[in-house]
Image 1: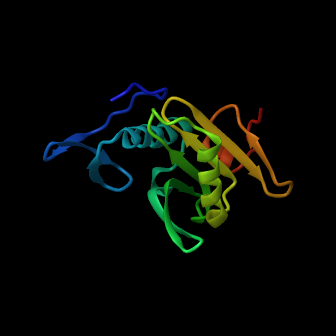
Image 2 (image 1 turned 90 degrees about the vertical axis):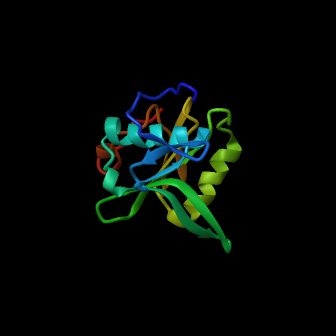
Amino acid sequence: MQALNLPKTELKFGKQGQRTTVYDIFRRKYVVLTPEEWVRQHFARYLVEHKGFPAARMATEVSLRLAGMQKRCDCVCYDRHMRPMVIVELKAPSVTLSQEVMNQICRYNMALHVPYLMLSNGLCHVCAHIDYETGEYRYLHDIPLWSEICGDSPRTV
């Protein structure tokens, strides 16, 4: 798999027939290793290992209903009261993080109403904070620490 712009992490691999699998600590099972899954595993562990996100409050492949259609968020992070705080949309490294991708995560946010949106293709990472009082999206310099999301003001551009 392609090298990513994320710290290395220890992953467990397996086989399912001819396909390589990777152990997902959040779903507690082996899943087929695709380029997007490669990014998901690295980015989720980056949030836990380097940004202090509580693994017990992170869920991957979260189902939600939008306009009568079933959709899935790649990752949702919850506060201690199990309110969603962050939606993470992940793409394969070959996928450009475009306005279309931002629109996708914004549609998901219509159902969840979170203050933070994150996008990553493993090479580029985008984080936006939504101020619901002003209706403004502010793009952040970096992915914030969990303690900043649940307390202090985010670092803005």
